[in-house]
Amino acid sequence: MMRGCTGFCILDIMNTAAKQGSVGAVKAQKLRFDAPLAFRGGGVLDQYELAYETYGTLNAAKSNAVLVCHALNASHHVAGWYEDQPDNIGWWDNMIGPGKPLDTNRFFVVGVNNLGGCFGSTGPASINPATGKAYGSGFPVVTVEDWVVAQARLADKLGIARFAAVMGGSLGAMQALQWTLSYPDRVANAVVIAVAPKLSAQNIAFNEVARQAITTDPDFHGGDFYQHAVLPKRGLRLARMIGHITYLSDDAMMEKFGRTLKSGSIQYHFGVDFEVESYLRYQGDKFAEYFDANTYLLITRALDYFDPALATGGDLSRAMAVARAKFFVASFTSDWRFAPERAREIVKALLDNRADVSYAEIDAPHGHDAFLLDDARYHALVRAWFDNIHASLNAR
Amino acid sequence: MNATINATVNATERSRRSDFEAIAARVEPGASVLDLGCGDGLLLDYLKQQRAVRGYGVEIDDANVLDCVKNGINVIQSDLERGLAGFDAGSFDYVILSQTLQAMRHTEAIVMEMLRVGRQGIVTFPNFGYWEARLQIMAGRMPVSKALPYQWYDTPNVHLCTIHDFEAFCSTHGIRILERVVLTDGRPVTFIPNLFGSLAVFRFEKLK
Image (cartoon, rainbow over all chains, first blue to last red; front, top):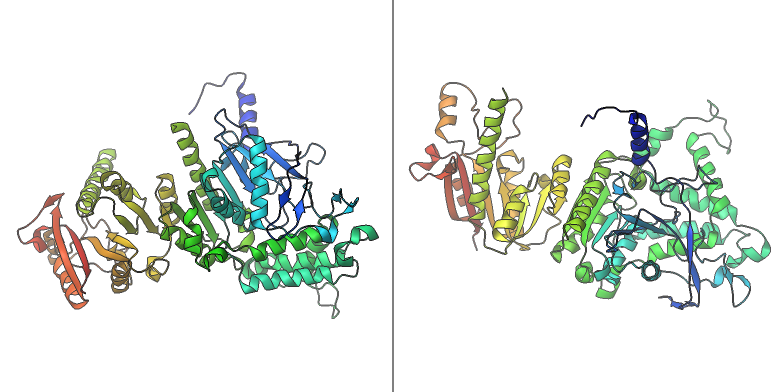
């Protein structure tokens, strides 16, 4: 629609541009929990903190909240940036913000750093009040189910009885899935992207190699490296390199790096010759600077153990029978970590239960990481999904 | 120009509508329905409203999948040509193939898959034996009509058939036809339907 252009025209345009953009500068928050949390695999935290961020406004009915769960190395910093770190942009900023597929003008979005993490929530590097030392190796082995319990407690404190949607990609999607099983009445929609109902032997194998890299690093000290004032950076670096290979497709890697040589000619040595080597080393180094080695172990283990069908003798359909949410499931054709066939196992279990489910198989070349990228078809689907949620909230 | 386009759109809409109505009349209320090649999902929407079905669509095209999501229809993105491996035997009351049979490459395979997954199958297709088509072929050209609005070089239809062809197919493939309705402009045709009917609707099941 064209409007008459007044003196405010430029301001309008600027405003619109800002609205189409980011949630802007955001602040991380923390909540302390004093009710003990017993972990599924044993161990208790008597008290803990959760770091989280919120964007948008919770409506009066408290019905427009969306929980965004993070995957392996991400955090509660989902969108926007920090005032003092303008380059630290949230990991799903292309998806979440004003006018974006998950529109913060409509929804109250909550991002939370999971327990055992290293970005503000209580984790292995936190001080155990009982000992006055870092938890280190003493931190309970955490599962997806435990995370969901902690997230539900956060929701209680925020006054959210029921989420309009719980959303995530990869391990984040497993949490969204678990929400529909642990708290079927507290989640209206589950948006699960690039997911599998459980890891394959190959998936676990990659995780094991990564963990071995960390635990065999002489600086690991059985997980209690904090006391030794060292960091098992070599192990973390390798773990990240291994992981990174699985996030990209063969084609995407070939396209990005090919066999391009760093110095223009082969050097006949074991230093960096190929671009891809340089890239992996750089990613590994960067990661080892900021990520906690114990957190890496815990999170990969949570991935390994996730298997909602374990309780039903491997019958995923029976496991999913309690779910009441509407599901949007998406996979990417080139994702070999969690291939489309894996997502279809979930879709089939939902079909068996006659649950509301839509499934999109997006033809994208980027591999597992496609869920973080700005693919027009993928984003249009998520946008349409949230448009419908918004419409149904307003129809009430 | 616009009037012509509108007339075509209205005609397409009308024929679509009569297709929907013909299918809905053959579906038990509250049934479970799988609609293969569901397009924008409006048939399922219609069946939901008219017959309170529990329905899912299967669709391969990205734009159609998006339309289904926009229309609030459960849609599973999948390639029918690769069968219905994600669906259990006997898991649906009806499996519908509306105006899609003629565009399938693996026609035999999909009809057998319909009867594996569904208790009954319902297909609708443009009757290639319709007099208009016959006349155009007699005149030496490939038929182009409301029901077959494509030129020979851009048609998605690779397996066109007549009503008699489909009946012969059923008898050689162990399929019992439960019901056959033939329509032209939404009205039933009983007199030489293979000549005077433009749209065929079959409901069928596997011979036990």
